[in-house]
Image (cartoon, rainbow, N blue to C red; front, side):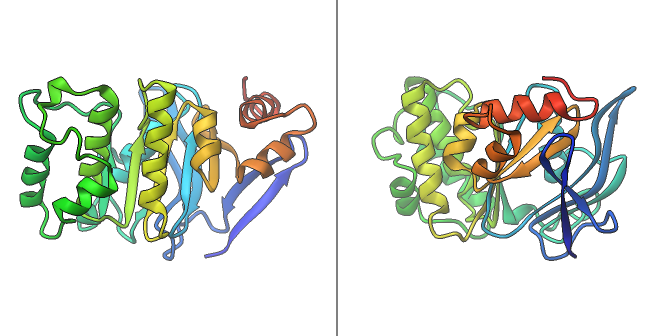
Amino acid sequence: MQTEYSIAADIGAATTEMADGSPSRGAIVAFGGVTKMYAHRKALDRVSFEIPVGEIVALVGPNGAGKTTMLEIMMGLRRADEGSVSVLNCDPAFDRSYVSRIGVQIQQTKFFGSLTGRDYIRFFERVYPNCLSIDVMLEEFELKKFVDRPLSKISGGERQRIALALAMINDPEFVILDEPTVGLDPIMRREFWNIIRKAHANGRKTLLFSTHHMEEAEALASRVVMLSGGRIVAQGGVAQLVSMAGGDARNLDDAYNIIVSKSVGGGA
């Protein structure tokens, strides 16, 4: 399915429309005209986009923009009210066979403080039929220094690292990270970025993450999807989006504010 890109003259932003509103079978994820309502509010409003194999895609926008709703629909936790959804060529609302092929790190992972990271790894090894070896896990996610300590005795950044490792223990094709560095200080955030880059280095995995931190999107994403009021107002590479926003945009944060303020019905 061909994805058509158009540049809206009034905002200078790239928007994506599927040719017939239906998802492509070749994409890891495809939304075609997806709408989701909560009471009388549209959390998502006719959203169409695709994620090809091997990309790192960032969803950016403030609280209420629709980021978490999009991720929950991909996970099969919510159903779209309208439109079509495909994740690994499955409709999450009806076909759960894709679940063993994805990995998920939610915003705040709740752990039993008396258990260790190794305890959790051993438990997850029993859940999935095929897992990375524990030696690979310890090396790739840099867990050796704290994996045998009770989780109540390690830092928030170290717990986040355990959560990321558990999200990837089944060697998934597609990884969803919902605000993966929330609550981390700048140093820990950058350490976490390095681990994400390492996990994606060979290009075998497709990663999608949501974030409030534009700097995080700039550092990690090959493509950024900008959300406002449940709609995609622009998407593209970081340099492309900054260029589209015009001369006043110095970075992605500026670009987001300019594009949203100029979009129809948008607000800064």
